[in-house]
Amino acid sequence: MKNIIVQKFGGTSVADTDKIKNVAKAVIREKNLGNDVVVVVSAMGHTTDILTKLAKEISPNPSSREMDMLLSTGEGVSIALLAMALQAQGCKAVSMNAMQVGIITENVHSKARILEIKTEKIKQHLDSGEVVVIAGFQGITDDFEITTLGRGGSDTSAVAIAGALSAKRCDIYTDVEGVYTTDPRIVPCASRLEQISYEEMLELARVGANVLHPRAVETAARYNTPVRVRSTFKLENLGTLILGVDKMELHRPVTGVASDLSQLRVVVCDVPDSPGTAAVLFDGLAEENVSVDMIIQSYARKALNTNDIAFTIDKTDLDKTKEILEKVKSKLSFGNIFIDDKIAKISIVGAGMIDHPGIAAKMFRTLASLDINIKMISTSEIKISCLVEQSRANDAVEALHKVFGLDSNEIAEVKGDLPNI
Ligand code: ASP
Ligand code: MG
Image (cartoon, rainbow, N blue to C red; front, top):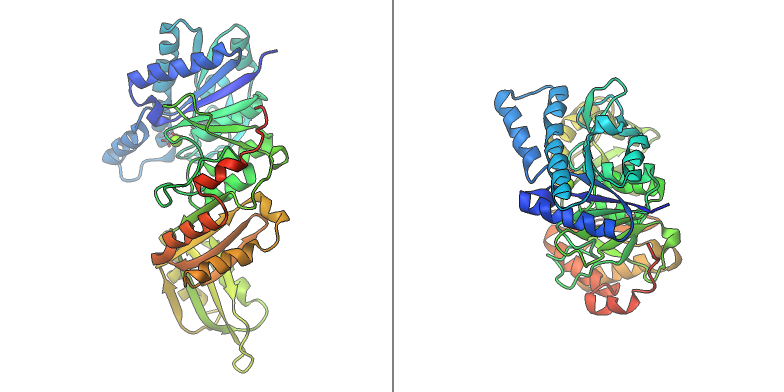
């Protein structure tokens, strides 16, 4: 039996007909390597934004069912044009939408999760030698309602289809050359990673390296499907392979450094030092869907019997949070509230840090040597984050990138052996 490779091409890769012809070449190239190929595509260029704008011209608040009906058409255009481009280049191909494949989702509009992907029809087409071109982003409910997976959702479609077909690999073709050790706009000597684990990729995705939709990474981890992020415009480059940590060679404790400027810090002073206080405060936030990231409760001041509690939230949740705190005040007495919106969360991520003690100390030492004050700290098994003054964020990223050996001149030596995927 042949290996199945799933290829996904994003909006920029299919932005016009010349680009679509170019994508067809990349598809044929993969097929000529002796693989069965399934292609997942997004809508052309900015189509989804343009359709959204049309809807807003009709109504400020269009129904989510009709929005899904509208937005799902974008991917429909791309699959037909790509199948035509393949046929024109002499390659047997067939386009399929979510209804024809049977991409079954929850009954939720605009952000549905995939429940099941039927594979019979895809396999029949593959068996008759065709490339199957499938619309990303869309799904259907078991009641034949059309749904979409949320913006950026075609990454998830591709990875889920790869999982359902037990594909050898899912290649996400995009306009960047892979996943980098940090943002190359901040650190010009950032290097492209040859490989990264699902867990590390998820942490980096959450702290602002937005190459891949986090849900796509979660889906890949669930099926243990290797994913390559690579450039449509430089086909000879292999990009970055994302895979299970068990298949990786761990050479370094730290894989990437990220900076996140999207949060602010709220400090609630003088809350009572008694059981249930934190529960009242954070229940209030949770009820209104405000997600809290870092939390610090200070050491109780015995004489006053109070604590200070500080936490970080997304900047966009500030007004909601202020309202919630006003309401909470009837159940919980507290003093002043301070808001600090000039902060940055700097994180180092690496599956290898589990086996290397002293990584946190090294991070703190590096920040101290630059006279950068740490306002909050949080850790997970494979991530350490420090909250610092926003004006020092780039200095911190640059220094940490260097001290953990990620600058491109140093990383070249530690590539190691790559698994043959
Ligand atoms: N076309 C959809 C969007 O623009 C889905 C995708 O591109 O992943 O969000
Ligand atoms: Mg996209």
